[in-house]
Length: 196
Image (cartoon, rainbow, N blue to C red; front, side):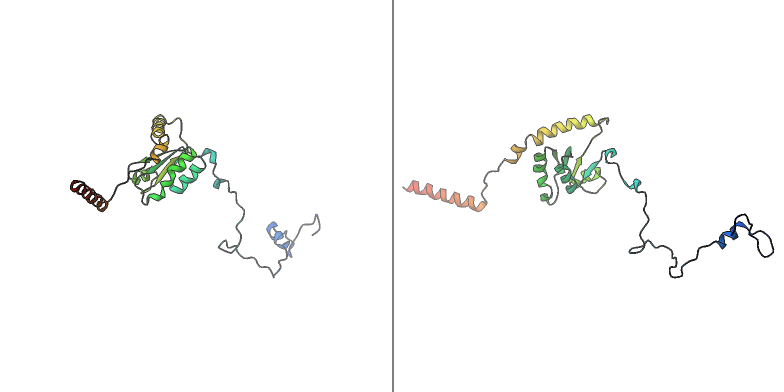
C-alpha cells in the first residue's frame, strides 16, 4: 500500500479499518499448528507467577504452642524452646524419656504433667499429644505474669533438682523365694548354735 492513498474495494467505496487488518495478516506455517495448553502432569510448563503471597514472614509469626516429639526435639536442640511440657502417661515411655536429659543439657526448662496426654492435646486441638513447647510469649499478655511464676516453680522443682532426681537409686529387693531361702538358712544357723 502506498502512503496517502485510501484503500477502496471494487465498487470504489473505502474499506473498513478491521477489514484492512485482515489483509495484512501474517503467513502461517502449516507445519506448526497451535493447540491449547494443557498444564497436567508431564504436559506444558506452567507460566511464571508472583509467589509473594506464598512466602511467610518469619519475624511476624504469632506466638503459638508447638506440639509433637520431633518438633519439640528440634526446637530444644536449636535452643528456641522456652518451656517443654511432657505428658506422664505416654505409651511407650521411651518416646519421651530422652527429652528431660536433652532439655537439661541445652538449658531449656521442662516439666512433666501428671494428667492425661489428652489435656495437652486439647491445647493444640488434637485428641492426644505427648509434648508441647512455648517458643515465645507476648509480654503484654495478662497471664504472662502467672506464667513467669510457674516457670520459676518449674525451674526449682525440675531443672535445679535434675542431678538429685536422676541419681536416686532404689534398694535391692529380693523376691519371695530368695527371702524364704535366706530365712531357712538363718533358722538352720540358730539350731546349729543351740545344739552346739
